[in-house]
Image 1 (cartoon, rainbow, N blue to C red):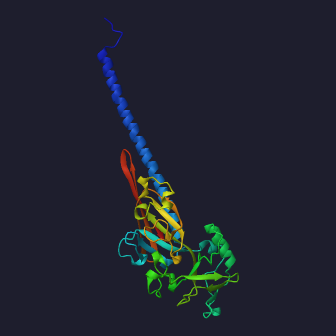
Image 2 (image 1 turned 30 degrees about the vertical axis):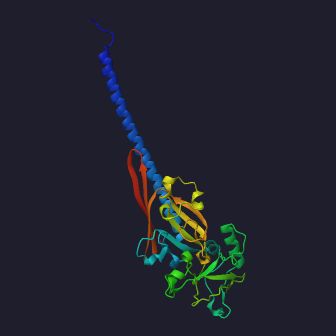
Image 3 (image 1 turned 90 degrees about the vertical axis):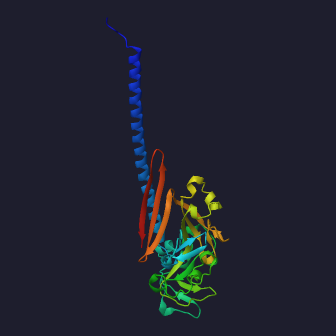
Length: 317
């Protein structure tokens, strides 16, 4: 007799086969989606980390070389980057008034033939105090007198622009973290390029080259700073991401006794903060042959897959 219908057992077998195929198809599609997502995240994080190290390189390229330090908020200790003997996880440096220099507002060189040490006046040809003031006010969105407020200070370049041999007490040279600032000078500059040192201290050495400085910078991960400070909490970063977020601090002046806004120590905290990158599991730096080497360790967990982990390095001259 001819059958026109499937038995119940046959239907069950068909359903079992379909369920197996569906499960295998789902798992295959899930694996493809996870691999695709991971590949996109690797590309995204690689681009973000490259942007971060490039930004750091741009800021560091206008540093005063021998002001760069490693700092530890737990011990409240710092060292010149070329002399680091133990872990100092926070990188800090004093930056030049780079925008004004790029515009040609000042020359960075003194006419030594017209030097007047008795009155502490230095002639810097092709320098214009008004233009420097206008550029600095625009940079920091301020209206007050940059010289009276000691926003701009002068540092002599020293021997070969490197860790200078005339500095006897490095800790007290630039005002870092409550120390003295014996190597920076309060000044005024007139429109003819005449620099007057108004500081009560007078320079022991006057070099032909000088730096005008207008801000310090700090780079640190959240785990190494005070993340409960208002400047950090205003960024509204989730608690889970805080420790592995890399921050850039600026617009504070050690020669005025200031430190960055999320320092765990000190009372005179000031300046601004921005996010350089998240998912930064490690931030390391060192000086080698007068270059600074920056290394970022990137780590991000991926649900259902192995975590993303790679490093990004940059050498800054």
